[in-house]
Image (tube, rainbow, N blue to C red; front, side, top):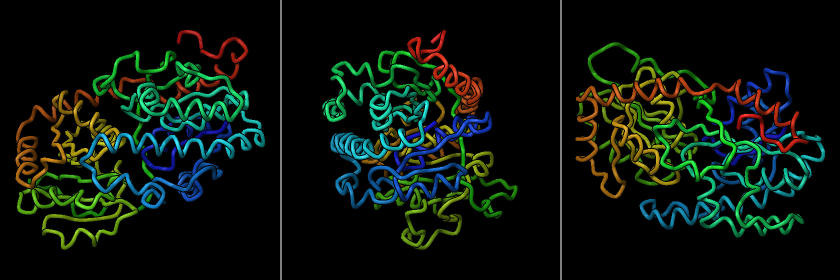
Length: 395
């Protein structure tokens, strides 16, 4: 089985629980992604083969320089990211087609923002299944700006045109977004949809420092802006300015692509690291302040921790809106994110137990979703029933 993903932690980690369960069940899984990201995938315990552009977490600034200068221009960002995903997907297709022939794969497991997997799989006459990597609506995204590149790539591969996107995901789509966070209707998803529990995973690494594990009366606030949007120049400044004199302990992780020193001298109550395992931090946290990326948001909510979202782009706006609508946190538009506004929001969330209660409700909802073992059973059924239409019975 070949798994494809855009070269970023936020795109890879939602696939890890299914991939690991496949390996535990005796199946071979090899990831196809960019050259530099292959090192990360191998570090997580999987085989990896380089395909396509070296971009996103490693070279996004150089490959797509227009994605970050103005993180508050949502329209420009949306167009830019759609174009980037389309370009990266098309660049990976030739390498991926050769890989499918070399390894004689019987299924391609992709993620919902990687267009190369479905196209290369169809060209190789191999079934393909998609894992949703959060709130983005894949059919809506394709219909608004990616349909033309999708059909251009189909023409280059000798495939029939697909004006209604029927071939994007004709087998299975695993929806990992908890029901309460879904900002879309069912018509914006492919037809054969199965819910799948998002299981937060970590990249490994050293355990967190012990200073914020000490018992005490001061709440722990965990601050992260992910591993892509952490590049935005002032991503952390409103938060650090808001919390410098507050009676809280603050753990900030800046991500592997940013030097902690770029934040300047840390206030006395703030500890800054490149990375700590979120699985170790979330059970200790009282509040998570983040860009509202899917992985971080769900990792917090799975532990019943409220979220203050300061979205910087991509799916963050969807996630932050839904968290606030569910009463499990608050959101602040980046254009309004002053230190005073962030401070007031932090005091509100920490001072009102309803936010924690609603986050705990979402934790129960996430825990009730089908586990990765369900996906493995269905994937095996897709391969076994491929001659009969490809969709497992009951979909």
